[in-house]
Length: 177
Image (cartoon, rainbow, N blue to C red; front, side):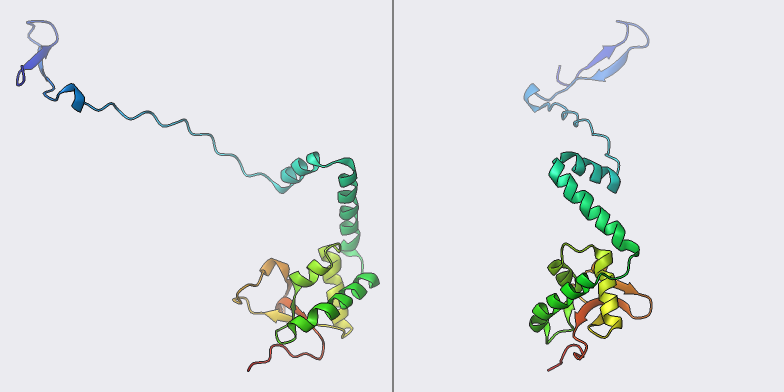
């Protein structure tokens, strides 16, 4: 039977077709691969408000009070002028940090803001710009292609570019050897 063909259809009928008989031994026949597991539907992109809501639901009451206080300070600082206490704290932090950056373009703003972590960004930027107008500090623009610059952490100025470094008013940037 190795080369014979079996017929299908009605036995002895005129529509009988020849079907090949497998000549491979049963050990050579491979089963078909298992079906892939069902694909989970893609999760839609979560909005920031949904993420904040999930985090807030996990906080305890005292922690929620801290979040509320921070949010209120942030909203109050949005349109307010610079807080003199923040300007003073920022100048004190510059006094501590600037010696380590004296041979560079200045203290990077993310590091300076980290020193004042309790200050909302709007109040921090307002204090920086106010201190620069008074001549107490100088903000230095970074090149847009400079390495290790967090563009979102700088102050975008339409005329001067990305203000990213803070230095003393008498300092004139990096000293080249």
